[in-house]
Every structure is written in structure tokens, then in C-alpha cells.
Amino acid sequence: MSNTILAIDTSMNYCSVAIYKKKIYSLSDYCNKEHTIKILPMIKKILLLSKMTFKDLNYITFSKGPGNFTGIRIAIGIAQSLSLSLNIPILGISTLAIMAEQAWRKYHQKKILVAIRAGAEKIYFAQYIKDKKSLWIGGDTESLINFYEIETKIKNLNTDWFFIGNGLEKFNYQNYLNFKTIKNISPHAKDIIPFSLFNIQHKKFLYTTEVELNYLNYIF
Image (spheres, helix red, strand yellow):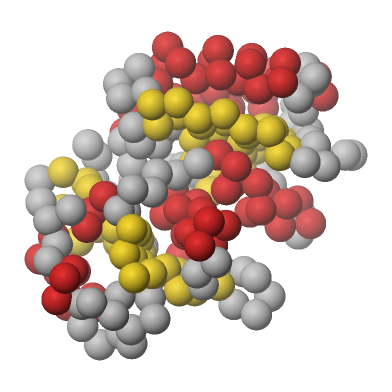
């Protein structure tokens, strides 16, 4: 089987799609609450752009959360429908890990703190480190925390961490001047592709009934 991958992200305010076939083709658009309206035309457009059809796909991958409940359900709904109709494997990747991968792709940072808003003064938080094998370590640090708990999480860390996500907006990170920070990062489907290739190599893809979402016990 060849490695033609469709990746979908609708977990936050942007929708994005990507196709991998020896190279990556991708599209992104601001969706706000129009994920359902925009994502299917984007998938059709990326197939045209890459000169492929649905029948050329071998794997479906998507952002499984945490994030916006409706957006996450849209992504898994599309992924499961395609998996069933095309009889191909499916895989969900953590939104927080996808954002860490984007920080690596854009800024070559290997130690990432991710914080995204979860509503009601809460944030989704994780610490990811890219190891010597280029694998992201830190899935077990993903948690839903109260906003004020950020300082407890980071106060004993050294100063070469890169802090990303809209969960920073109310945090007084100026007190931590040695932390590198960038707020305007949203997950992108193209950053799902490296995880997809790793899981293909290690035969970790699933079929539709086995997929679990990652709500971290809070829905917004």
C-alpha cells in the first residue's frame, strides 16, 4: 500500500486540510462557527489541487482534540465516513501535539509548552519535548487546568521552553522574560502528516470503531 494521506483539522477556529503523496498539499481558512459549511469544499479542493480522488487515499488522519467540541465531532464524523466508505485506516492525533509540531516546523523549537483556552477560566495544557529520535514526548502531561495553575506548572522549569497558544492571553508571561512566547498558533492539518507517517511505519493505524477522542474532561 502506498502512503497517500488525508489530514483534517477542525478543532479550533481555523479549518485546515492536507494531503500527503510524496509532498504535502495544504489549505487553511478561518471558519469560526462554519466548520461544517467550509470543511467539505476544502477537502474537494485539496483533492483537485493534488490531482487525486477519494479512491486514491490510503489513510485518514484528524485532530482528535482537545478543542471545540463541535469541531472535533465534525472531523471524526468525516474521517469515519471516509474510512468506512473507502475501507481504509484512520488515526486521531492530539491537537496539542499538532501545535507542538508546528512550533518545530516554523521555529525549530524542541521544548514546547502548549496552552489553549477551554472556557470558564480553564485551559488545556501540555509540555512536549522532541527527543533524539524526533519523537514528541509528553502526551501524559496533557491536562485541563485552571488558568491560575499555569504558574505552578512552569515555575520550576528552566528557561529554554517555547510557550504557544491562545491560553497565554491572560497569563502574565512578562514575568518570565526568558521564556520564548508566541500566541498566534492554531493547529494545522499539515502538521498531522509527520505523526501519520510515523504511525504508518509502526502500523499503529486503527479502524473506525476503535478511535477515541481527546476531550480532557471538558467541553466548550
